[in-house]
Every structure is written in C-alpha cells, then in structure tokens.
Image (cartoon, rainbow, N blue to C red; front, side, top):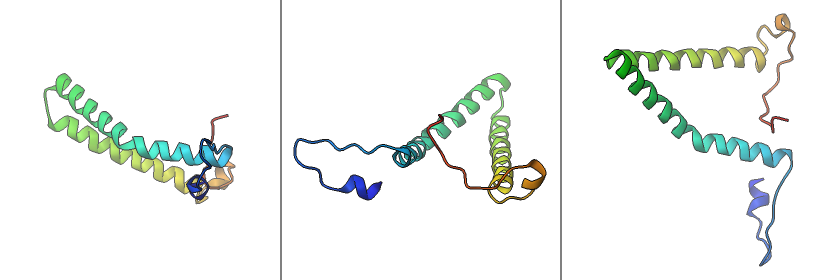
Length: 104
C-alpha cells in the first residue's frame, strides 16, 4: 500500500485505494498514531481520580503499575494460546495470526 500510494498522480486527479488491505493498513496506522495519547489520558485520569478519592499519591501509582502488569499478562496468554497454539487443542481453536479488519 505504501508503494501504491507513493506513485505520482496526474494533475487534477485524486487516487483512492480501497479494499481489505487498505483498510487494515489504515486501521493499524490509526491505532499506532493515537495510542500514546490514549495511554496518557488513561494514566492521567487514573492518577487524578484515585488521588482525589484516596488522598494518596502512592496508591494511584501502584494501581497504574498493577494494571500494566495485569494487561501485559493477559496479552501474553492470548498470544500463547491463539497465535502460538499452546493449549489450543483444549479450547478447540486453530492458532493463527490475528488480522485487524473492518468489524463487519
């Protein structure tokens, strides 16, 4: 898609790329572009709300660290089962790489 979109276009024309591949490329790029902002907002909201509720700075920091560890462990288990195939036979799933799609 990168090479296709880099091709020069004739003057006064607009070239659009569509289809499954273009959708996947655009979706992944959108997620990558917005992830730092989303993580920052989540961390700031957690810090502020827990500080206001509990009056402690240590507890919100501890909650952020524990959330990160829990989310990391969850993703590790999902990758181990659904991509690497560990225990896939017990769950009756076929291990394969995940493909982001259109949601349809």
